Length: 259
Image 1 (cartoon, helix red, strand yellow):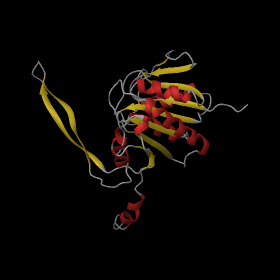
Image 2 (tube, helix red, strand yellow; image 1 turned 60 degrees about the vertical axis):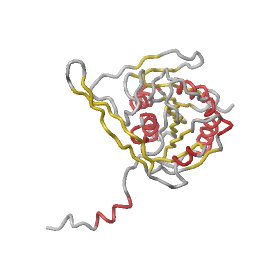
Image 3 (cartoon, rainbow, N blue to C red; image 1 turned 45 degrees about the vertical axis):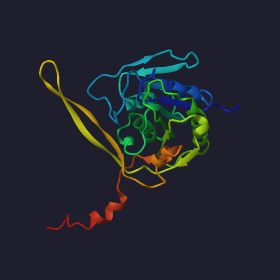
Image 4 (cartoon, one colour; image 1 turned 180 degrees about the vertical axis):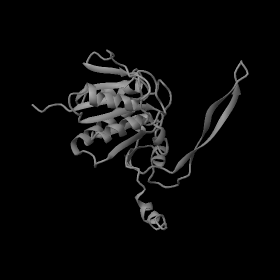
């Protein structure tokens, strides 16, 4: 009898978030599931880790079918690190992160705790996928994503991923029957035009609230933003090697070593 794949599930919205519960439900159809996720929301924490505070791991029972489910007092990346080095007896066959409440397309991947957890798994040599739905509502409907999530996860388990590559998967906010399919994309060139809302508290002290507007500056039809806007699931292969290889030759022409 073929052994079931071992699947690590994590997220950045917290272990009780509806998104991760939906993801767990799908992964239970595929393999043996271990859950290690933050005990509270950790959105936009990026790749931060806990080094100046203690970490606490608590075994929880939120799903009676899962023997190993743990909440972590730290970040999404902390959760993956603890899972790999302290909880699991062997490396999982797959790590999935999400389903995030909100899009992680385009430049948002830089800030995303969801994707940073997946990237951390990728750095450990584990095939990893981050899943996000373009709906920030806590009670968002994740049912339309489940068929696609299962299909993508099975393909990764079957085929593996190129070395150093992680998948960033985003879903449009649509009914399953309205989703046209899946597109492999590049990350759109977009920015946040940010501003700070300055306010004053009752004690007279000024404080700031970050706000802004997401601006897509990319007209390409091969981007994640285009795919989502036109009813497709977007998959962007991302990497943790941040080297700008195209710039090396130009920098080598600088007279850096002349005396």
